[in-house]
Length: 295
Image (cartoon, rainbow, N blue to C red; front, side):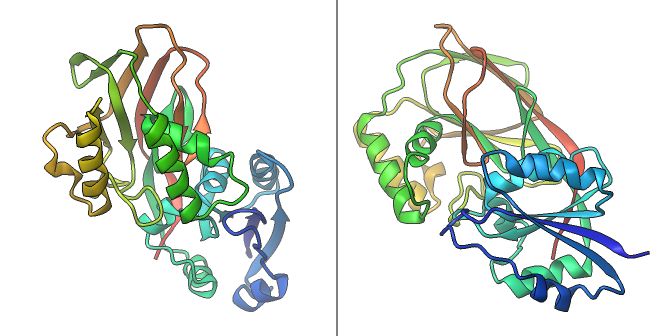
């Protein structure tokens, strides 16, 4: 029986010039062994629609061809199913692909798909919505909110969004944070929750995070003075942010973040802006419920 592989391409991810040739796919996946279907997204959340259709069409492997946002749309449909997720990193950050050591080189990434080595990875949810790499409340969410207003999504644009957000970001609200039997009140600069060890662009707040340990890595950074904020930013660039005593790390299976001011908190999930429908945020890990092709 031939393996049924569907490729879902986001043509505007990353530099916005993504093409995947049917001829190239036929070279890697001969018709005697594989059945290939190529689909392209045309609007926001179209990857979700196409993935659901591919599941109905009995796809064995569905390949997300784009960035972390595209991967999130495709993978969200595949959790707790036997369908395997494939990844061709074509985005700007590519955090999840980098953690899984899936290269941006197209032919090398296609070889990984052809070899069909599969592992099961953990996934997370924020208020029931899946994420696979990371989610966050505070500074990173505000950076993503600014970043999404850019017409281009490159590292330079991300740096610009970070600098603009640094100038204007002041989180004065107090939230109640519950995790591991602990309840604390905090006015956070950043609450970052990670399933993988990369945010994208080879940057990381949680270098020891694992996709297969059944745990989420939580980084808690309280409100900082301008001087401490500068120090944190510099240390982060060199992956030494743990040197700052105010930065705390822990691992959790679940946590709750609640705004005491009844304010809807800006969040991000897998590098896409996400606005919850209520002031309370519930985040949880779901062990090894997604199958992924890896090196």
